Length: 221
Length: 271
Image 1 (cartoon, rainbow over the protein chains, first blue to last red):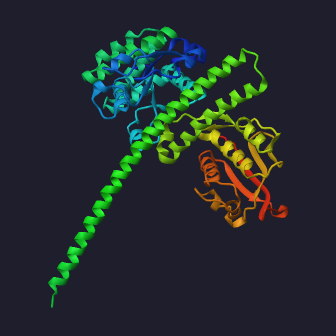
Image 2: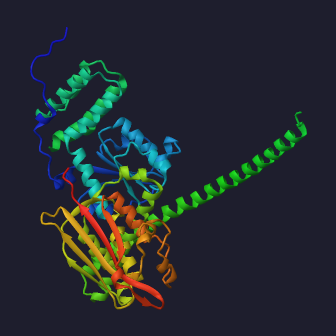
Image 3: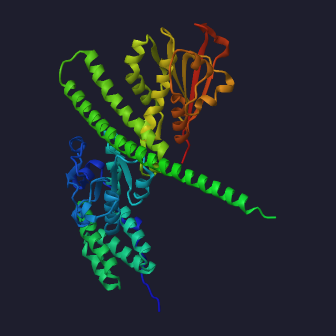
């Protein structure tokens, strides 16, 4: 038996207007993972971005949970992960747990095809000497992406489908997500997730999305 | 009758040849690894220094804004700042050449073509003055395109080439003709340089190639400028045409010179 009543809520029904970039700059935190001091920190803070340097010694991807945008150096970062791909590996691990984040690979090796092949999980890249104009543009793009609930949901939705979640279950979750935003209640998504039979891995994704993304979006939009 | 001795001799010779080629292959592999290591670490370090240089010169320029310094010092500082940006653009170009896949992760920037030429003219103004060559910008344009970080190099190499090959006291004109709705733009750079034969036009756009008369002249070059320009035009959907004006040929020290015209066409497509 297959009965659904009512009209499905559409993502376009979210009714959220994306705030100005100046507003996004004020509430979205940006993490920098680099084993050396990040040369653009001061200039980017002067431009209004909220940057936090976390160093290169990251031991768990959950350390960046509260940062919707992450800048990650490729060399000398995440040695604890014991991968020859260092920062590129960290980026792909962050992507697995937090598909909705905007990840920027920061590297001096953009000429090397080996590294760019490993950077499939990144959204953008910047070189060590990228001019400040480039950095501001990349970060603004990142803020617009993560400041938009629709974009963030679509990123999570794609990952859920890639991991084999049934289309109908994804639709149910999407309904709960739209409802969460409209009623400004992050608990609605979790309640719906609990009624569906998900693996612990999928459940973990939804829990992290709720805690790290949905709560922040509801508070600030 | 089968000549086994002959076959064995041939087989031994082939084995020797194979061993020789294997040894050569291993040497080449080792050389490649050594060169790659050197290239990787050099580019990495140069990028770091380039980033620091542009950051420090940006600070310096900001500090000078608040102080009373003479115009020449201010101009020099701005030139240092812009030149450091050119190092970055040049390295970004190397990325494109060595690893075109890197473009996927680069975020295109809105770039005003007129402004980029103005900036290149600024960077090169000192060099032009030393060579007694004046760059004149005529017309205007507000056209902006989506450009990769290496795009800055395009106006720079075109003007740098024009200055380099120009005899002293000759003008360089950069004329901007934009269509009424701002959807089409032609930038025409007119300078004087060693005469380029029509059948050499496509050759000088290849890497390391220069025109016959440029080679005969005392001006040294690696044949990179127009190659870079053509490469960047390809990435940004621009059209580049070059030609010497046959009607204006004259001799300088036995080398034919003529007005050299570079035309750059951009068209905005509705998407």
